[in-house]
Amino acid sequence: MAVLQLFDKLLQFPLFQGMSRDDLEIVAGHTRFGFMKLGAGKTVVKAGDTCNQLYFLINGILKVRTYADDYGYSVEEQMAAPNIVQLESIFGYYQRYTRDFVAQTDVNFITIDKEEVVRLTEDFLVFRLNMMNHFATQTQKQMRQVWNRQPQSLEERVVRFLSQHSYYPAGHKVFNILMTRLAEEVNDSRLNVSRVLNDMQYRGLITLSRGKIEIKQLERLLYTK
Amino acid sequence: MAVLQLFDKLLQFPLFQGMSRDDLEIVAGHTRFGFMKLGAGKTVVKAGDTCNQLYFLINGILKVRTYADDYGYSVEEQMAAPNIVQLESIFGYYQRYTRDFVAQTDVNFITIDKEEVVRLTEDFLVFRLNMMNHFATQTQKQMRQVWNRQPQSLEERVVRFLSQHSYYPAGHKVFNILMTRLAEEVNDSRLNVSRVLNDMQYRGLITLSRGKIEIKQLERLLYTK
Image 1 (cartoon, one colour):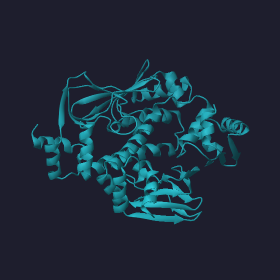
Image 2 (tube, each protein chain N blue to C red):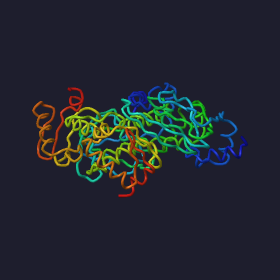
Image 3 (spheres, chains in turn yellow, brown):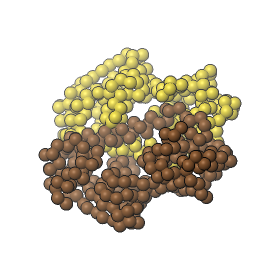
C-alpha cells in the first residue's frame, strides 16, 4: 500500500488522530503492518480467541454476534469501516475477544501485532494519550450507568435492555431471545412484555418472530419517545 | 521522605509493581512528588473537582460519598490505605472526580501531577503497561456485567443494587435511600422491598433506620446465600 494511502487509512481511526505528518511517516515506515482480506461469510475472530493483534477494519461491514454468559440469548449487529475490533481486549486481565466477528461483505483489515502496539505507545505521545483517553472514557461511561435513575415504564426497561446489549448504539440489530427470557431480564411477566413488544411492532419500531426481535434502527427506539 | 521509605510506599500500589529497583530509583529521584497531610474531617476532593493530579493514600482511612445523578440517594463507604483516589478520572472525556472523598482519620498522601504521570508513562514500560492493563481490566469487567443472568428473587435484586453501587466490593456501607426509591430502582413495590429488608435485618446483615440502610460487611451479603 502506498505510504500516502496508508496515512489516510490510519487517520480515520481515533487512535492516530492528532499525530503530526512527521510522526505518521515514522509510524508508516517503522511499523510492521499486516494486510488482510476476507470474503463475505468468513470468520475474523470468535469469542474466546486470544487477542494478540489489533484489527483495523478499513473496508466493508462485519457482523458482530454476542452471547449472554449462559448462552440464553444472543445479539447480532453490524459494524462498518472504519472500526477497530474490540480494542479493550488487547490489555487487561482477559485478553480475549468476547464476541464473534464475521465478514458480512468482503472486508479489508490493517493488522498490528501487540508488541508493535506497545512500541507505538512508547514512541508516540499522541498515540499513547489517545489510547489511555479511550480506555478511561470507556470506564467512566460504564461506571456512571448505574447512577442514572432506573426507567419506570416497562417499555423503557425493554428499550434499556436492548440498548445496553448493543455494542454500537445505533443501526440494525437482531436479538435472538425468547419472550420468557426477556421477561426475566426486565423483571416483568411474559404477557406484559409481549404486549409492549407488540405495541412497538405496531408502531414500526421492531419486527417480531418466534425467538427473535429485529430492530431496524436502534436510534429510533432511543429518540422517538 | 527517605528514598528507601518512598520505594516501599510506591511499591504498595499496583501501578508501580514489577518495576526494577533501578527504575524505582530513577522514579524517586526524578519525579516531583507532593506530600500532603490532612486531619480527620477535612475534605480531600469533591465530586466535580478537576482531576489534575493523582492522590496516593499511604496512611489512614477516607470516607467516600457517591450521589445518584438526580441526588435521589447517596452511598457512603470507606477506603483504607494503600489506595488511589479515582485513577480513572485523570484521562478520558470527564477529567473530574465523581465522588466526595473526606478524611475519616488523619490521612497522608503522596501526590503526583498529571504531567508527571504522563512522563512516567513515557519513561517506564512497566508503569505504562500497569496503567493500560488497569484501565482495560476495569472496562472489561464493567462491559461484561450486563451479560450476566439477571437475579430472579427480590432479595438478590436488592443485593445486586447494593453491590453495584459500592466502589469497593466489601466492608461497611451506608445507603441514604428511601424505601420508595429503592423499590423504584429494583422495580418492585415498597411493601415487598420493606419485607425483604426487614428479613435481612432480622438475619443481622443490615440495620435499618428511616431513609438509611447500614451494611456492616458487604461481603457477608454477597457470600452468605
